[in-house]
Amino acid sequence: MDTLKCPECFAPVAPEDRFCEACGRNLLVRRTPLGGPTGPAQASCILCGSPDIDDEDYCTQCGRHQPSARDRVEYTLGAVSGVSDRGKRRARNEDSMAFGHVAGKGVAAVVCDGVASSERAEQASQAAADAAVDVLLNALIDTADPEQAMVDAVAASCFAVEQLVENEPLEAGGRGVAPSCTFVSVLVTETTATIGWVGDSRAYWLSDEGSKQLTTDDTWAAQLVAEGVLTEEQARTDRRAHVLSRWIGADAGRVVPQVATLQPTSPGVFLLCSDGLHNYRPQPEDLQPLLPCGPEEFVKVALEAGGHDNITVVLVPFAPAS
Image 1 (cartoon, rainbow, N blue to C red):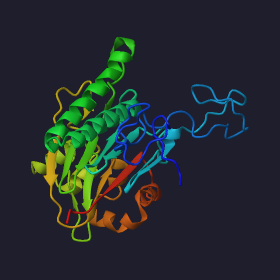
Image 2: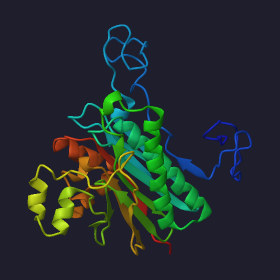
Image 3: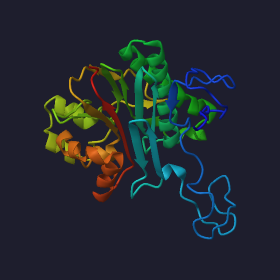
């Protein structure tokens, strides 16, 4: 029989242990790596095979820049899975995802899409996702109110992104745009699911009993459609369609997420995604048939449709408590 080990320090642990005696890690909690993937995608140069890669991911032998580990990210924790892909047109992947679960309590997942026109967008999205998922996992441990936890998670994300400016100020003379990102998250227990969002990353409920979009985009276009100024078709084709009306960033002011709580009565899957997917497949009935193949299939569909943006998909299954 294989010896169980702490995922943090690899010290031996027993099945009944709640904490690692060596490092103190809570063994009931598992989450994706803090900080996400870093460095090049592989240890040796893709052109000459040299292992000498510098801190900026250039081969010191032939000068070739190496693909980033962020270009394609895949995580699986139990039944929860996610894929994030750079796409075909972007120079780097500015999307981030983070998720985790607390044994016997539930699951928390976050997707953030870095605003491409802002500084250090990929750092903003990763910092926001990491900060939020930690707050949500702690809320599961403490059995805290999920809607308040979602508000607290966004506040933690805002603070984390603001710290990027504190620690590394923008260029002198006011050039550049403060690091910014969108946010969507789900906090799932045995009986309920709470969704929180800021911006145009989306959450969907996909089920054989009926699928639906759970979020409304915080964009210029969505606002005008809601006010009856534009039709949905007019909004989709307008060049300002993706201009955000709310976001997370040092220049965003006080941000409070939109929050919704559901109590599904049938099995299904919560899908979180960046606009790299829903730009091509916006309707829930077009997404539901892809479920059996996992998040890889959703990303593949977006890539085959053009892959103009980064694409991130996280799937969180839900089965109501009997």
